[in-house]
Image (cartoon, rainbow, N blue to C red):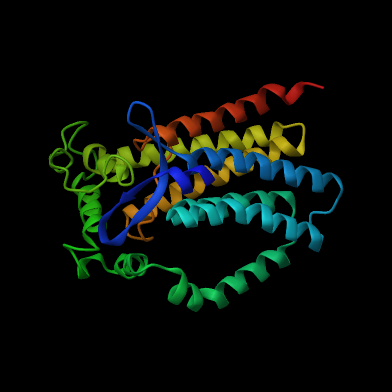
Length: 290
């Protein structure tokens, strides 16, 4: 990720979006380093938690300081890249792993209170103008239907146009015209809504929930803390990506450039998610070993 900050490729998007989050590989391929870092981080943070859990020091103040330093590294790096969507996902991984590790609830409440107090500071000094506009337009995309609200509004129209059964796979007129920007990745759910309808959307969500529950089962069968914490870190990754992606497609959350795992197009993310699945499989395979 540090290499990306120095030598990476910058992508200019709409309304002031500027992210330097990709490495140009031979052959013209782009690799998003934060996707690989998510998998590496959920494992390294799990190892950190395992060491302190065995020493019964999860709730020590000194341990919390070390947690904070460990956690801030990827969050700050992704923020510097201009990819705050990835930074939010890292925070979700952190919260999932800390919760399952047994961090005292008072620390979560203190963190929530500090976040609430800092909202005015974040709004005035931490967010770019386009990010503020996305939050405001999320509440009412119809207010700017040809500008900031265009993507979410068109996404909702596509989802609603599919009705109960949809227009049929590869038969969506709006999909063929490309009415929804970035429909192959960030707004893939709008394609499912138009072509597969309510039934297809329900199936997509059901498959993702089944995967999450299966990982939860693997966590329960794990023989050590490292396996449990790694599983829950991956659950945090998958669950948070799903929530934010579906939320922005349905205008419940602002657009933050988060894809839908295993459905959205994207080479970096697909490779890294399957790497994560490989880690989960290795935990399951070793559950009965001494």
